[in-house]
Amino acid sequence: MVGDSDFELHIRRWALVRAGDPIVTHSSRLLPVLHAGEPAMLKIATAAEERWGASLMIWWAGRGAARVIAHDDDAVLLERATGSRSLVDMAADGADDEASRIICKAVAALHEPRMTPPPELIPLDERFRALEAALEGEIFARSLAAARMLLADPSDVVPLHGDIHHANILDFGARGWLAIDPKRLKGERGFDYANLFCNPDHAVATAPGRLARQVEVVAEAAQLERVRLLHWILAWAGLSAAWLIEDGEEEHVAPTLEVAKIAAAEIDKS
Image 1 (cartoon, one colour):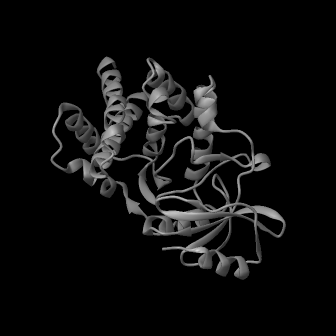
Image 2 (cartoon, rainbow, N blue to C red):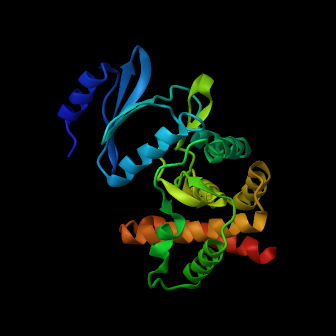
């Protein structure tokens, strides 16, 4: 369990000044701070996945993602987003197309080749093992079939963020829109666009015509093949629903499966 003493250790080590109250998530504790007078975020991981993600943030070196200022085993000091714009608000307030294009631009920057090899990454097929469980129902079967098809013959394999959505791409002012909280995966780049179709919330994600419209927007902006992107959405939504069942979050399963059903219907029209 991370406590104030852990914050204080790094405050002293990196000469930080507190600039806000702690923020607690299921996998980390965060503290807004100032570093050399500039806004920063001190993040201390409480889950292994967050520690692994920090290694990918370091490798990205501020291109497409928040810049890492300092780090050690469990803690990372990041530049802090201080811009006033929100992709969540944009998607809900009539600027869904613009929000999707912003996300695509940020993801493309993450996928650009680097001169140095990436850190050790988790193969994408390992992420889909939850979907291999004995889940009943036609839509789970279709999601699994889509995942197997995609994973059997991947293209454009790159280091992946693994959890792209509207709240993980933030406004960094003059630095633009940058990603936070990666999951350190490796696989076909199309995977990184699938989760935005389940976001920013259930009402937006399942609104009539929304998925079909955003598939066109994202396919064009990210230069993805439309039907293959639909298969990634179908596979991802099924996997997300499987995780929700594992975590006992039954109230979110039905709307997530609705996204899978909409994607499957769009595939059937193609």
